[in-house]
Length: 291
Image (cartoon, rainbow, N blue to C red; front, side, top):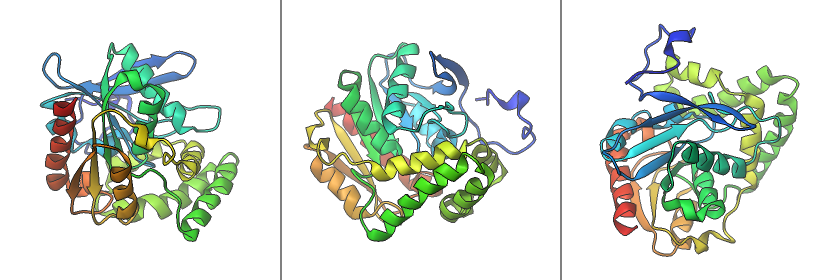
């Protein structure tokens, strides 16, 4: 396993976890993205791994790559504004991220996939199904919800992001510093290493802030019950970011969904990979067997 960007990376002397091979994919009229595309025997189901807000595909999934790749073909790339993701001139939309997933899959010759979404990746996975149902074999929704605003404090927090997104167009460094302190380091301090700093340094923080606003405006409550593909919901039972009641509501709204539980916080995919990965594998296997 090699990091395709390593040779030209000014941070190349830092310790980097083993990462699958990356290939550059050109999306017409949008730009180029670095896509991890690996694993699985011929004909294996395809998993599209969709990462969370302020993370990257590698930061979110690096500890899950190997166990998933033993059984499935895996694709993963950074969403718009995150890491090496596309740099859109227009305002960030979760719908556009969903379309990116299908367009990347099409270029790679993939007709059908299982969308595996973590946190922000959950809404993107839901929208992949809603916008492209004929391409989705199933859903695995992890540490996520059908909506993200509830309490007054949360609404005020996301309203603050609206202003910060505007500020970031003029003073991105101030916004980057604020968001890193408030949202990223506090949740991931125990795993924050030079490699992770490098990953976050690649963000376009104006777009990332707009993504936060888009998450706050998202709700699938009016249509999520229409999901007609096998779905697994992986709940992080001690989650301090996505309340467990909202994760439970997501499970209850999808007819036939199967719940899987991890006794950990929102960063379970990294901080408690020993618990999370076996649960994730069971959740994916459940979707495959029911599809």
